[in-house]
Amino acid sequence: MSIEDKISQLTEDIKRLKKERNAIILAHVYQRPEVQEVADIIGDSLELSRRAATTDADVIVFCGVHFMAESAAILSPDKVILLPEENAGCPMADMVTAEELFIKKKEMPEAIVVAYVNTSAEVKAESDICCTSANAVKIVQSIPEDKPIIFIPDKNLGAYVANKTARPMTLWEGWCNTHDWVTTEEVMKAKETYPEALVLIHPECRPEVVALADYVSSTTGLIKFAKESSAKKFIIGTEAGILHQLYKQCPGKEFYLATKRLVCPNMKATTLDKVKEALDNMQPQITVAADIREKALACLDRMLAVQ
Image (cartoon, rainbow, N blue to C red; front, side, top):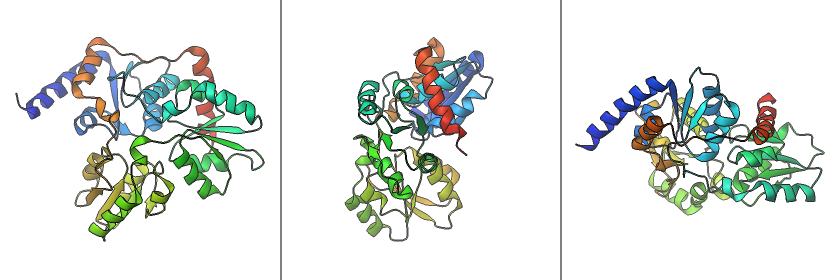
């Protein structure tokens, strides 16, 4: 059987199982193209969970990484949450633990803890308010100026927000392994190769790389900008999976990765085989303990309340 035939067969099996289970499939834009193609909703992590919570599905299959499935479990406690690849984690999320954050809060008792959604449920439960890469600036601006801020766990996103808001913040020493790989040398080389291209960068990249961008935003923000821009060529500084949606939504335009190293192994761990197995076996299921969920939900709700 050819790869194309196998993908076609798996896709049909998944559609059948999805109907039988009353399931909805969510896929992050960094997922494999064939996984994105079987998804009902494609987007960034928090928006996927928010939209899933409003559906009448009994089962959510989250094609992403562990903290994303946890967010879905926090927002949709009455649904079964499946993560097709149980070991799909996030190195950046693992760079802060609830215990470490608790100690830091003792050192800075007056501080407001702003937690990037790329954190575990336990860490969210220890935090005051969440943010996404799309709304981080707005969230920080909503905090009274006399309050010190601890920003966790991404020092690169934190530096971007601090620069945009002119707010001093204590930045956690965490980073996204994939985005942090991008160097100024690679971006400059890409600019020399494609001089007409605009540079679109995710704020999880290093500050010196962000400084070279024509536009900085979240994954969905970058796609929107590319769609609406009159430019025809773009250099992309985020995970390679976004290219599938860029080409689908921006016909006639060209996209070039800033570096071929922009591939997240955790995001690519989910396959169609694993999606089918998850629906077949209703495993692996992701749950969040009630006490942790209640506190983490409050952290997310505070974010959602910021207009």
